[in-house]
Image (cartoon, rainbow, N blue to C red; front, side, top):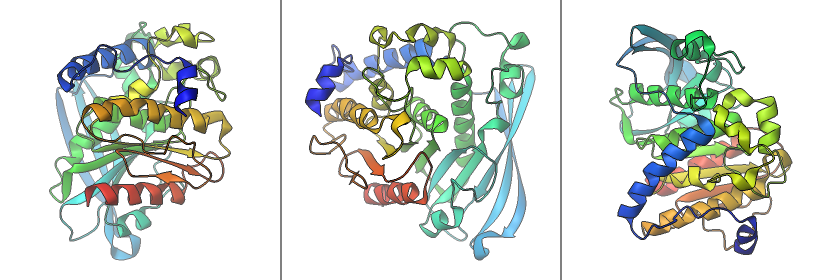
Amino acid sequence: MKDILQKRNIPDVLENVNSVSDWDKRREYIKDLLQKEEYGFIPQKPDRLEFSEEIIVKNFGAGKTDLKKITITSYIGDKMFSFPAYSTVPKDRESLPAFIHINFRDDVPDRYMPNEEIIDNGFAVFSFCYKDVTSDSNDFTDGLAGVLFENGERCDTDPGKIAMWAWAAMRVMDYVETITCVDKNKVSVCGHSRLGKTALLTGAFDDRFACAFSNDSGCSGAAIARGNTGENIYDICQKFPYWFCKNYYKYQNNEDKLPFDQHYLISLIAPRYAYVASAEKDAWADPKSEQLSCLAASAVWNLYEKKGLMCNDAFAQCNDYFHDGCIGYHLRGGTHYFSRDDWNYYIKFLKSKMF
């Protein structure tokens, strides 16, 4: 794997870094770089936040929890923006670990989110539908986008939709911090596909998250761009240009000119936990490039005298999982999907690290 990674000619994430102190400065540079050149600048925390709760279903999940709807209201200058989130918190428990799941729907449970099984494992679950924040489209006049932009017009470094969805996940974390039964040091953020990209960005830019889980995030998420055999920057910018800032478009068919690669994003999570999941038949996400990215990012964990990805320098075979280091990885059988198998791997990893 290391030989293949060297042939990809990716930039050195630890350029001119010899100590953790050096990395602290380098990390701020990388955060600025990724915002300027890929995702746009994540909106600032609101001036003020308000939360309201409503029990939708009492004794949900065979009586193990109450399903609640939380309305999160942000005051941004002279404007106000609200979106809903949902919680299933195991009853009569303290110091709970938790997931914040950035979801495609507001269903609880959802085909990507088996709530009862997750709470049976002792985790609280908080989720929200990404489209309740802003549309998955080139419309920058609706939802949060409409609050941020005059007439829906963006400048070159203004946030794309991924950065806005990440902002929303951070606001859910603001709410979670008010829940006394949740251990604030054991909250993870997760998402699938485009929302796996979002989860990585959230974890990279918000140190409150103990772990960021990326499920099948592929291009512009976990996968190295240089030498990628699946979706590339041209493909993604042609179909979903609004996910990114406008500056990112100049790297279409021009990956070698990137002043970074996706291992930079994963590296920002160090020395906390990161997890990347791939699916064997998800060629569009390029599992090998996702695993290579984890290996390349591991150098930053080593700087903290921790282990990153521990995979014996070998690509995963179907149903392999690597949980020994601070970067977890698995290759699930099947196609592009957020499976119960993925959740089980995530829970197994967290229990080995945090319990």
